[in-house]
Length: 524
Image 1 (spheres, rainbow, N blue to C red):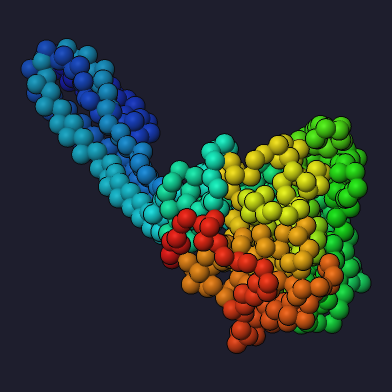
Image 2: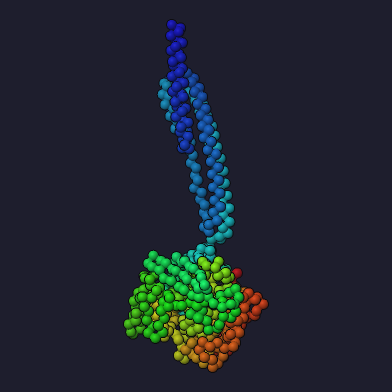
């Protein structure tokens, strides 16, 4: 009998031990961090077996979970960094411990569950986030090299409000004022939106570009999903470590730098006489959606209502600069020293290229006429026959521009000139005796634009020399040549001591008191 009792007790002890072991085993398998140790432990154990069941359940779950989340996060984001690491780790460990074991086990079940789960969760999230972002959403670095303000949240201004004066370049369309260089980047972006909406259509972001440079010739291939085109230009001259791009050629010579010419027909043809665009232009092979036939004036013209030549040509100059960047190891030039210049329709082209590409260090607009440096308003108000908004070449601009009233535009071309700031600009208006080119309108526009450089404390980065009386078109005067050389010496050749504080209006009247009703706002 005693042996049978001992044997029964042993079997009972082993059974309990086995059940307890299985329960412990199950619990250890349950360590995948839901570990919800609610310990319902139904142990209804009606036996008075105090069954201390010392389920200490240390559940080491050594989840130190340091979760260092270093998140250096240099991103220019607002960094709300909500760190959603809620780490619920509710250790619910339901651990039902199916010990139904109806023993009345007081079951102290000391399941102390120390659950070292050392989830110290230091979550250091150091988030150094150097991001000095005051988060005014003006960070210039959200764009790309040719247009740093591309990420600014801006839109074009409203057309239709009569304003006889040149609009305030220091004022956003919502009435707020520019006071910092970061804000100026966004103001430039807003002016660009106005120009695109009312004058030339969009200049697309950089597409896929490849390039080679051999024997002095740069070959650039531009691809989009729609197709591809090629641009070619030869670099010539033996000048200093700088480059002047002629649009399509320089009327001023090399001025001590190497030169290359932009052949505009490789992007879009130029027909002075008929003002007709061509749907077969190379540009529409890569951007076919920008071809849209339009009616211009009283005659039908194969133009486009979506794009103007000056947007496409500026885009083409930028693609040449892309090619120069890709082949710098071959040609070895300093690409921080690029200038652009042209005369007449090429003077417009130079200004648009320089205004829309921030990699161009110096822009020289020679006798650019209507659509260039002269403001539309002051040309419209001039009593003589001037190239104004309804008499310039139709194909150069969006068709709709021909119907615009200059005084109702939210912008004007003193702001196109000002978009070059803080980089260097030199305007060379034509002979005041040749009213068509709007030299007096240009003189007023450049004078007004120069206030932006003055606000930045660099007034001598913008200048002007009007042609001497009697000079021929695109034949620069001696004064103009001297001014151009001074700007090249300082801003491309790096001769810092050169005086570029040059504002010579000749016999043109540069007084803006009748067309400017604003004052400059310092830009820091």
